[in-house]
Image 1 (spheres, one colour):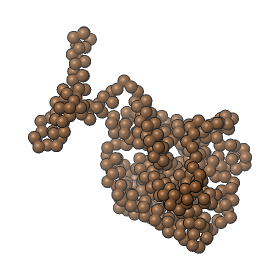
Image 2: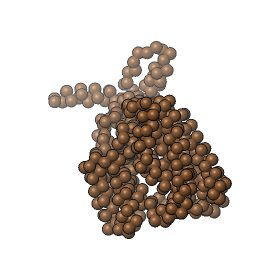
Image 3: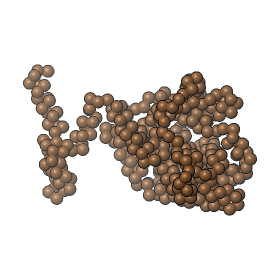
Image 4: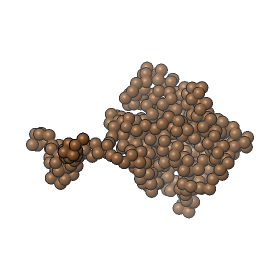
Amino acid sequence: MTPSMAGAYIGAVSSGFSGRSYSPPVLHPASPRLQFQHWQDMHGIMPLYDASRILRYASLPLWVVLLSISALLVVGLEMLGLPASLLIGPMVGAIILALSIGQGSLRVLRWPLLFGQALVGFLMARTITVDILKTMAADAPLFLAMILSVIVAAAGLGWLLTRWQVLPGTTAVWGSSPGAASAMVIMSEAYGADARLVAFMQYLRVVFVAVAASVVSRLWVAADGGNPPAFILFPPVDWQALAATIALTCLSAYVAVRFRIQGGTITLPLVLGSLLQGFGLLTIELPLWLLAISYALIGWNIGLRFTRGIVMHAARALPRVAASILLLMSICGCMAFALHTFAGVDPLTAYLATSPGGADSVAIIAASSDVDVPFVMAMQTGRFLVILFTGPMLARFIARRSGLAEKPV
């Protein structure tokens, strides 16, 4: 390329990316779009289209941009005290980037993603302790009745959303599952549902439930309770236990793919980790920095596949989805009242135990309140296990009864 040609090329590119030299299309004088573009031109502000084009061809690697946006969102969510920030932050950051540069420009590699999913399985296995199992066994009929009641209520709402075609296929069924949000998002994709809309429903419910549980706890209990656990990204680590956990995570992911086990990246490490931990053969070591990597991979994988059409579909469905979440929370509140009236459980313990999902947030709130923590966690864990193993069958049953096949948005 000659110097004159290079100069002409640079001049053309700079004129394309310059706010003042941007030439708006000829529109009707009363057009709001023309008035806005004229205001941009007068103030030297680059139009959104050109800004998106610069981001798309920026020399800064897009992964660095995505990581920076995700980190800022995680910090902001943590400052606001909202739950699941390590997953919601990267997911929202990936959605922002996907809508700016277009779907498909970035993609999470398959094996790191499978490793992250299997790690979530071991995280869930770590919550299944001998004490929780003893608490569940002591009041098995009560636990079973409450767990099945919440699941039936959630399935009924999911069926209604499916019949009304608020969301495509069985997406509403997976999104309405009252618990195990991360597992439901991961497993829904393996069974043909739209993981993006499942994540939208699940994490919207997590936020609703966590905020409601926090408000009820603050109103019910005096302010002398303990503080939530500190956000420690790099805690002391048992490196031998961590190496064993990582090795079993890799093995679980490989076996699930090798033998084509649907949802196996969650169920296999859950079963394996629970058994080894129960027999004292494994200490599941999961430092927060490793979980942050796992959550980021899962969040990015979901968010980077969002399109403007999916966002518009979620926005249209938001009122009805939010109404179904509030109705489910109200039903669970009635169950908590029944648990208090007929079983003698104190009201706050009953409310936290029957809260439909957000087990991590409920655990933090319970730990900082004067409640029966083993009872709360036993109810949450029992419901999670039942949902995990009955969710696929329930989704297929509702799909057959509703007469709707899976179809993309």
